[in-house]
Image (cartoon, rainbow, N blue to C red; front, side):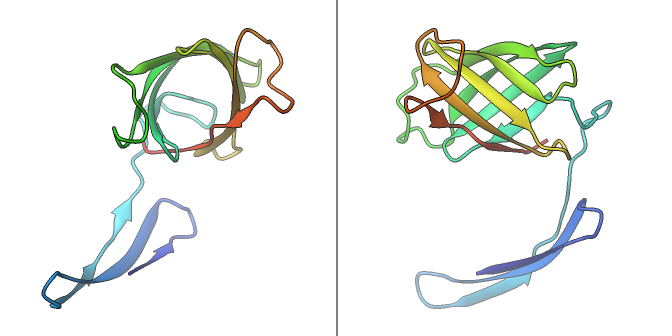
Length: 144
């Protein structure tokens, strides 16, 4: 088990964990962390690593363009021989990313106000609109 307390500014957590090994010996220790801030980054910068339920995304923003790759967190979950690619453009405010992913589909990600996560949808095919019953969710949290 673990317990974390996030600082008011959201950049540091302090906590602890307890565990039990295979022979029943209990272990506990402090577990503290500091958020890694990408130099030159800003709220609307998509550059960095992002983690979703099944993928790790590596994105790079250059002006209003975003390109990157994604790979499974666990190779048994998704059968990708090589990392997938993703690319697209941003809205004028830099908050909405719309583009394509390698398996021939469309994506739309919406960056949170604090720039630390996005909520998104994806679908298969060439449809410009990412709406309706044939879409799936692709949400992620910034790692770096």
